[in-house]
Image (cartoon, rainbow, N blue to C red):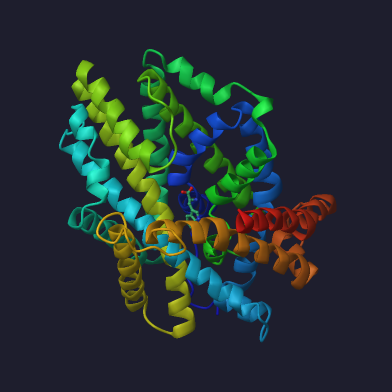
Length: 451
Ligand code: TRP
């Protein structure tokens, strides 16, 4: 299976690719708001704890499966548990990323449109900033942008693991950090910015309710792209001598730092403009353009420049996450169905384009079509975020903790004992994988199911 398979070229490449998957819209439009709403620094503390105590064990579970088999999600399950129902987990984790890709690409398309708008220097008047609702409910504009976004993903995927995904990630991730730091500096320099800083850092333990703790766990889980086979697939491209613990911790650290930088880039500007903080698409596509327009009255060129940098950041962050979803399905089709990478890419493109197009139209012409009371876009979002991702994460930890041979897990995490990891560290990680993570995600899963 491993013969002829591509590998990431270096540790830097591994971490950049995985960080590319992890760093996405979740860091920019979800994290800052959640921090402010749920107790500031107190929330950040819980978030860091759950990243390392809960999300990393799940990350390691996926990474152990992927790297030990050097196979796609389905092939990995077939190798490790042949002839058992675990192969359904392999299939589930091919389905989930394709569904996420479909609606994520619609949002990616919006960022294409907004980048073009900012390049055309349109965010200089409040009227131009107000058109979000009208745009997403129209028919053709969003469809064209969705197509462009998905085609950009396909182009990277066609390049392969090394000259596509690795090259793209190594180039864009460092640029992303530079851009977000520049935007943060601008944002912090605005009069009134300190109110936004206070919103993020003021520890308020009284807001740290059980649901805030659950939100912190859910956010760290979502932010690391867990539970849908992306980390498994990327890990299957990691060399045997690479240290999985370092790759995992590095990815989590980059993801966290980026989320914090995004928080300090977004919230000070929101408060400086005297606007109520919001979460979700509204924050990025409505609140911020409004702010750019407001700032534009004083210094049009600077605010246009910042708007351009900001939408480049959103677009690149979304692209690098989307290609990781794309790769899961491509790896499966190439390795299990024996078709060429090109055909696999085109096939997935066609599928994700069609489902995505229907999701896009569900904001406008198809808004009357409801599944379980939700439009198609929101159904796909809820199905994956609340259900399939947690379910997948739960099954991955159960598989590694209870089904896989413990020696094999140990060998994978210690590279056959050659890494200087003491037995106690492995014992702790294994305990987290076997007991803590499944119980906690199980609780989150059941809560999502019932609410
Ligand atoms: N981590 C991504 C973000 O922060 C979102 C995401 C969730 C994701 N699940 C994923 C990305 C699976 C790729 C694959 O926006």
